[in-house]
Length: 176
Image (tube, rainbow, N blue to C red; front, side, top):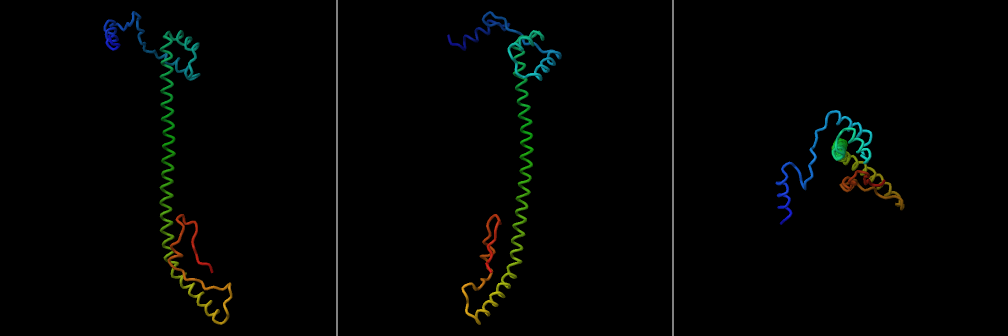
């Protein structure tokens, strides 16, 4: 005979909840006073030692197993509530960081746009200034022999304005 069939026949033969001629304990609903006493005991110490379980069961008139199960369920509820609180704190932190990140990205885009605008404004003035210096240096060197420390200043061109580090930490400017 297979075990499944054996279990089914035993449960049919014991309609009152008796299995192997042992009476099943009825699950009792806890009274308001019993719940309060268990809650107070749980607040004092959430770990249930065997001696304490025995004392509580006698005081409350409950089976020890019911006291133990109540403590297990209460611990599980506490753990779920703690996880929910932790989640709420982490979610708030995440939302705050996300908002800050979006703000920084937006500010970065504004600054990039401003840099490009200023670069376009400065390009003609820089070219004119450099042509002026080149002209002065050229006229000066036409009269004198050029020393090794004197060199023509190159005109600002797209190279100087477009070779900007991605993080905008430094610019490449011509040396004067």
